Image (cartoon, rainbow, N blue to C red; front, side, top):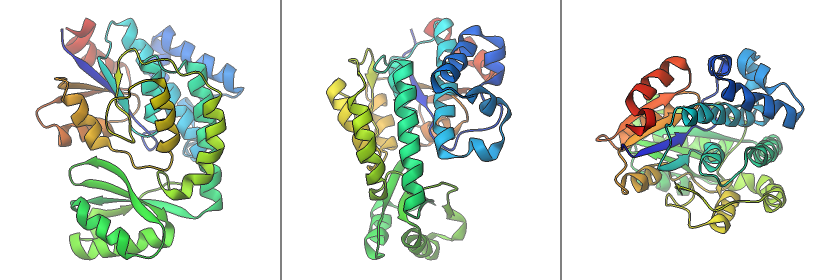
Length: 312
């Protein structure tokens, strides 16, 4: 039987129409959207399926929408007997991974992501921050640039070899981007369309508020291995996960290390569960000997089912 890892996307993978085809085709996916709408008291399914895009891109909506779409897709895979041996999620996607690992019940995941997204959006409004992708630069040199420019900025995402993301005060991030452009060229540096400096010290106010909500939610021991963003290693239990979820709001995402940790168990097949193909691309760049597919609609589901049905 093929050993599989499921990876779950984070903010930025959203698109209008996500989840609609699976919900129309599979009652188990539709039930996830219905449960979310009932729990949240809002028409999240309509926002996912129809937009408008301006509302879907708002942090307080985006994070919930991606969580629900990812869990709906997960439920369809489970009905087809396609189950993971390990999971991980990129930033927000960590909450979908926790549902897949049995650590979080779906209603509690909704509650946590609702609080997380609201507090992060609020922090972004009160402190002007941004993020930027830097391509083709060594970590040590980028860290040196971050240390050189005055103000708050840090490496926020270690996505894959040659792809890093910085986060911090807008002016400081722009200063680092200017240094990087002079070194590697303008086309390799890109400001990201985000509403705040995620995974940076500017998110401390959000982290402090989120901690009280996190402490009120029951976390179960993981049923399968789950690699965590903050450490890039497998969680040791529910208490460890609770601590790492708290830290994740202000700490970098160690995604390259996460993928290598999973590969270290012998797993070489990855399925991205939810909207987009961002993580599939990161798998291919980080682990060129591994395979990666994505599932976000009926067509991609069919391809993955043919390959991994009952984890052939």
